[in-house]
Image (cartoon, rainbow over all chains, first blue to last red; front, side, top):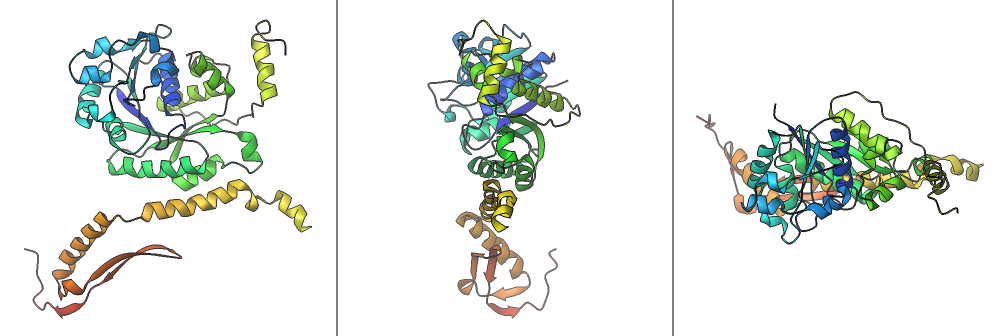
Length: 271
Length: 90
C-alpha cells in the first residue's frame, strides 16, 4: 500500500512548522511507522538541525531532482530511530530550483517505501508553498493563538482548498493555558470558530521544546514532557485513533525548574 | 459595582478584542477581489447577460464596494433592448 503524504504548512513563519514536522515524524516512527521527512524550505533549511542530523548531510533535495544523487543516497537515516529518515533541503539554492512536478515525482518514489512522507513547507504563499502542497494527501496547518498567525492561517486554508486538496486540519501550537484562563490569549474554540476548521492537536508552550531542539533531540522522544505527549497524541490521531483533547497545565518557570531537578538532581547548578 | 463587573467580564479581555478584530480582518481578506478577478467576473457577467439582453458595454460598470456589512459586487449595466427570440443555447 502506498504511503500517505502529509504537508505541514502555516503561511506565517516562526509558528513551529519545522518543529511540528520533526516531532510528528519522530512520534509516528516511534509507533513503528516508516517515515520520511522532507525539508522543502530550500535556501533556509532547518529540519536537519531540529532533528539533530545536520552533520550527516551529503546530498540534498536539489541534488536528487537534478540527478546528481539517487534518493536513497540523499536520505539520512536517524540512528536513534531506524524507521525515520530525512531528505534535507539545499542551502545554496532558492525555491525555484524545484518545481511542483518534480516534487510530485520525487514523493511518488518515496510513497512506495514509506508509510508516511511528511513535508515541511516554507513560510509564505509562493513557489515553495506550492511545491510543498502539490504532492499532499493531507495538509496540516500550524498556527499559534496570535492574530497575525491566525490570519495567515486563514489565507493558507483558502489556498489549500483552491489547490483541490482535502480540507486541512489544524495544529494549535504554543498555547499558554494560564493566559487563556485570564482572557489574554485566544482560546482553542475561538481559533476554531474563526478558521472554521477541524482540530488535530494542541501543543502547549513548553520550555522542553527549546532545550530538546538545542540538543538536536526532538521533544517527542521525551515521553514525560507535555509537548512530547501532545505530539504522540497527534500521531495517534493521524493513525485514525480517537484520542481526547487534553487539558494542559501551565509550565511556569519555577515548576519547570523543579521538574528538571527531579529528572536530573545531580546535573543541576544547585540554584 | 461596575468596576467590579468589569474585572470579571470577558468582553473586555484582550482575547475578546483579538477575536473580534480577527473576524473583521479575515472577513475583509476573504472577500477581497483582485483587479484580475474583477475583470474576469465582468467578462462572465457580460457573457451571461448578453444571452438575454442587448447591453451598452461602454456604459457598464462592475465594481467592488466595501460597506458596513461587508464587501459587495455591484453591476451597473445599461440595457439597450431585450432579446425577443430567446437563445436556447443549442
